[in-house]
Amino acid sequence: MKIVVDAMGGDYAPGVVIEGTLAAVKEYDVEVILVGDQPTIEALLKKAHYAGDRITVQHAAEVIGMSESAALSVRRKRQSSIVVGLNLVKEGKAEGFFSAGNTGAVVCAGTLGLGLLPGIERPGIALVTPTLKGASLIIDVGANIDPKPVQLLQYAIMGSVYCKDILHKVNPSVGLLNIGEEEVKGTGLLRETHELLEKSRLNFIGNVEGKDLFSGKCDLIVCDGFVGNVALKVAESAAEAMQPFLKRHLLSNIFGKIGLIFMLPSLKRFKKDLDYAEYGGAPLLGVNGVVIIGHGRSNKKAIMNAIRVAKEEVEHNINAEILESITPS
Image 1 (cartoon, one colour):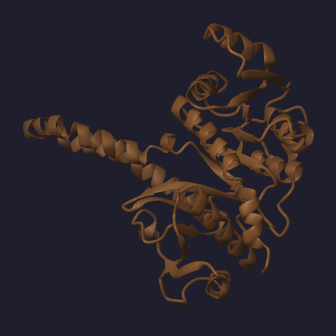
Image 2 (cartoon, rainbow, N blue to C red):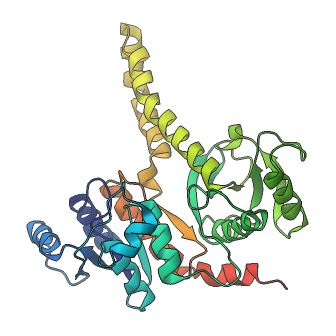
Image 3 (tube, one colour):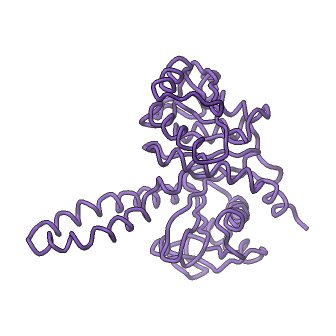
């Protein structure tokens, strides 16, 4: 199996991307095509003393920056690592694609280059998150900020397939993110979506609130990309602020310092549960191919796990399952 990796995508590219790739090919049964500036990539591979045959390099002369306009840059930079990499998947030279670069550009290039699955109107970014009852999924966290009710229904169908096949959830429960649990709450979009979900064959439990993001109340939370992205950023901020808050209070006196010694193992496990690097990347569901989007600040572990996520999605043939579920019986 071959996975294309955008070597130029992310805040710490290409160095960290190559480190993560080297770890992935060592850990998993996968081959990788690194796409980007060939001389730079080959120099870094040489510096790492890599002499294997599981990594190849495809030159791409351009890079789409993190702050560039998605649609404009995809059209103008046809030789960018994102566009070149996705074309390799389109041409059948690889089974999956991963990038920690410009999210909007990956969504745009993936949609235009690979196309959408029949019956799917818009792609959605799905994110695996930790909860008090195990892993759950949120879709969408940034691909589509102005969806229609039927598109949110499609997100629920695609997310349910992912929960079954990848997260091993039997009959995954689905919740609609809203400002209250009552059916009448929320915008017209949410009320219409609620009605569609109730009529579907999904295990829909009704509306859920922001407090349920990590409670484990349901296996899948559905929302529009604007709300999902804000929720994601708030959660990231809270997780990052927790460590300095704990340090400030625990180190303020001798008793806190002594207690910290005994708490360290538990704090390390707590940090691991909240570490995005453990979950790798977020699948872009709905496109006609396997596309994984990574955090811009992805480290070596995150890159390695994102490649694993791409491999798992290919192995489980998620798109075939989505097509079967989305097609009316």
